[in-house]
Image (cartoon, rainbow, N blue to C red):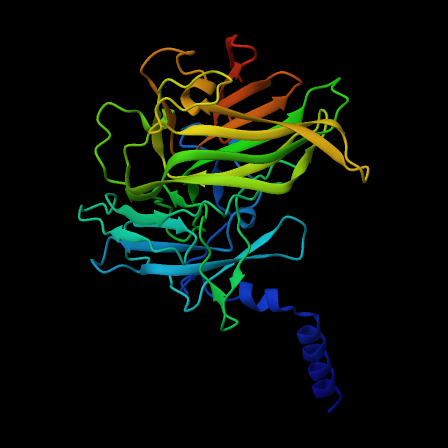
Length: 405
C-alpha cells in the first residue's frame, strides 16, 4: 500500500510540474501543422531594395487585415481563396497577432506552396488565379474612387500612413471607408511548414501640401483655401499590365488606367487657419490615383490659369494689416495659382513634360508664405527614399536644385 501511495504522489507531482507547452511539444512531429502568418514588411515604395529603412514598424499602422490567396502543387483548387487574416496588437509593445478562421494545415505531400496577399481584406480585390505549373502568375485587379473631402487636413504633423477612421452609418453599422491605402504583396513561396511572411508595397500615390510662415514675418498669416484642381479621382488597377520598357522599381503609372471626371482636393477655413512661423502644418495629405500631371503654362505668382486642363494649385491667404473696431485682426488677402508640374521642377518653367504621381511615390510640397511671395520646397520621392527637388518661386525667379537622399 505504501509503495502504491508513493507512485501516485510521484505521478501527481509530475503532472503538476507540466505546462501546456510541455504537452504541445510531446505531439509527434508527423502531426498536421497549421499554416501561420508572421509580421509582414511594408515597403514604402515600389523600389526593390530590401533595406529595413524602407519599411514601417507595424502592419497595423496601415490596416487591421489582409486577404490571402494560396496554392499548392498537389491541387488545382486554392487552399486559401481571399481568406481574411485579422491583425491585432499583442500584449508586448509593438507586437502583433495574425489570426484567421478555419485553420488550414500544411500538406507535406506537396512540393511547393505559392501565396498572394493584398490589404485591406475588405477591399474589392479581384484576383486572376495562376495558370502556370508553379502557380507564380497570379495577378491582382481593383477599381477605386477617391474622395476629395477625405484629405486628412490640418493634422499638424506628418502622418506615417493614411489609415482613415471608420464611419458609422445611419443603421449604426460601420460603413466601408473610402480613400484607403492599398497594398499588394509579391508572390511568396515559403518552405513547407514555415510561417508565411509577405512583402507589401503601396500601389497608390500620395500628395502632401504643407504650409508655414517665413521666419521674421511678424504679421499674422492665415490660409483661407489651399486646393489642388484637375486631378483624376478614379482608376482601374491591373497588376499584369504590360509595362513595356518601364522599370517598376523606378515608379510607374502604367498599371493604372484613369477614368471619370477630374475633381479637386480642397481644404478651406472660413475664418482662416493660422500659419505658424517655422512650424509645418499638413493642410492636405491625401492618396492619389497614379497619373501624370501635364506641364502647361501658368503665370508665376499670377492670377489666371492659362490652361485649365492642367492640374494646378490654388492658394488663398491673408497677411494681417490691422484690426477692426472689435480688436479682431483684419487681413489683406491674396490669391495665387501654380501649375503642379511647374512647381515640382520637372523642366523649370518651360517645356512639355509631365509630373508623375507614380505608384508608391509621394509628392510633398511645402509652401512658405512671405510678405510678397510664396516660396516652395518640393520633394518628389518614394515613401521612404528618393530625389529631392527644391524650387524657390518668388518675384518671378525660379531656382532648381536636385539632391540625392
